[in-house]
Length: 132
Image 1 (spheres, rainbow, N blue to C red):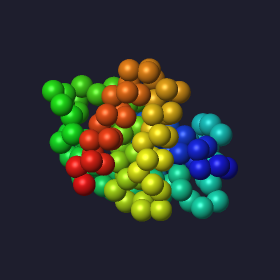
Image 2 (cartoon, one colour):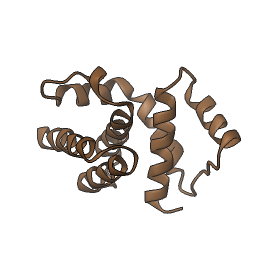
Image 3 (cartoon, one colour):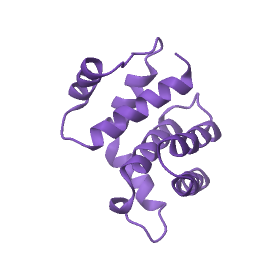
Image 4 (cartoon, helix red, strand yellow):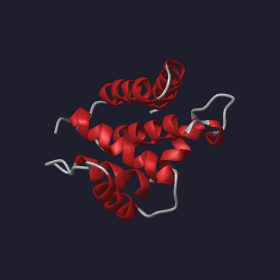
């Protein structure tokens, strides 16, 4: 599995978790049972998914602080899931350059949402990186 495919799998898990109250392990088990969920060789998918929810308050604070005239509650679930995944990578995975995380987040938005959402996500992530 490529990193791009693994990131896509991680995004789907983060998105699925946002739709229900299941814990992380239950979401992973449901993914294994209901669809073609694969765990990648280096463990990126599970590491990122669990990392997002282990650090959700910190991640949401970064997002909230970098929204202009928006609240986190107004962000679409797709965009929020993409932002959470990218912020986790930027803040907790030093081996992934921030520019790569941002580019991949924009691509996920284009795939699962709209060009407007992709621009919005790009702007928020750019603000987060510049704030450091």
